[in-house]
Image (cartoon, rainbow, N blue to C red; front, side, top):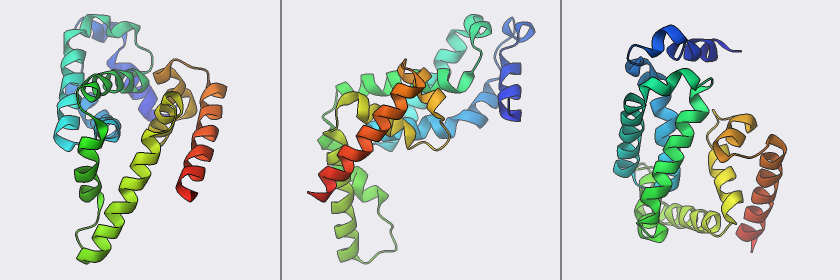
Length: 180
């Protein structure tokens, strides 16, 4: 197990469960990836920030159950995923794609290039949205370089081989759709 994993397990060790979780350490180590997961689903930075805050609120609310958590990263990502999906159901994805695409474009580009780039980003976002749900979920989680296939499997409640298969199909479908 890597140093981060060993350190992470210390947060949830039996002697620590009676006390409050080390929230500053959790926030420091995991808020970045949780934000990126929420942003990938919501395409809105303020909504993503709200989701991350809600995740850590839940950690504090359920601190008595933390002794059962062996791997905090997939557990926190799963909570983030579920909360972001709940928020996403309330908003049509295409409502946010235009603004999100514009936010992703470099401010240093000339206006005509920025418009072209935003258009390409919208095209990719649209193609991702049209993927089958499980393929889309696996692809979005895999875009977070910090998640292994095993961690994605834990978040989605699937096997590692299933996740690898979903990723292969998602990338193949996405490539086909973007080439058309």
